[in-house]
Image (tube, rainbow, N blue to C red; front, side, top):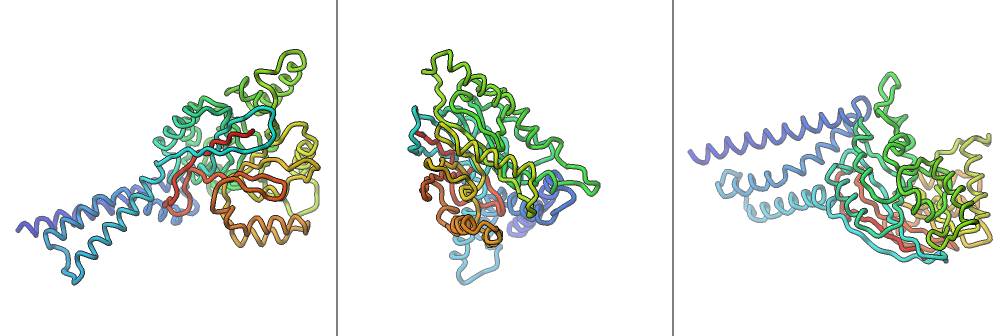
Length: 401
């Protein structure tokens, strides 16, 4: 009688768990993208939310073995231990590991007139798995406790976020340091990909407008001075106002002492915009050319913020040492290599192909020397693809001297 009651209870619990996983994942799929890639997102969310039920499955499995309601197996104990280990590892990599935020400190020599400390975030991937309120609160609290002049975010903000993008990102408004960011190709394409059948965007606000609301300086293909804008503007200025403030501040430094907030570096965003295949001059090409000229003739050391480490192959080759590139890790794919090999510039084609084939750089983070350039690759804090995370999310703090 007891065995029968336990069997009914366990099967009912299992059925309820399965229904919860399927139905809740379907609801969240509609919230992320109701018209396109439904099955792909639904399966990913089923895998994600199934991890939350692993402790219950482990309890049912152990109780079923103790009650001897499970089918008798020759190696029942070995099977039970293996199943518990697999479920426990799944729960750990999906639920526990993404919350184990850590801070790593690095020193970079760029010959600055005075040290500059920046916190680097990469691959936020706010959406399906990452960017939950508990994740962002912990991220903001950790950043606020750091002794840093600024926060730099290398792009890859989104991974199927909810329709209320500003609401999902609003906790970033609590950061007590100026934030500078660029967008990746996936961020730029997200608005065109996620549309309804009538062509209307699903997001209530674009990412760029969200930056304005959150007081995040989106530098795109622009440059600004450091740490003048860090110390004086703090938060609350748009990109245009930051640029104008930098110009005005540089004028004021001619009349006032600059001992407290000297300009020690130039921060430029190298926007990763998909380029057309034609030879026609486009606004993005013109902006790139103007930015390259500014970097080449900069009087201060230059720090480049980009979303991909292979962006170094497109930067200008100046007489002075090439700048420090701060970027996130990019997944090396055969498609990236094939696209690099189709470029008409043979020399840069070889350089970019070599970078893309550098699996060590694409899979690990840290400081790399590439010719006369320095590249810092941040490991990131978000999750994409399958919901597993094998490495702890990391905030990298760079002390640049």
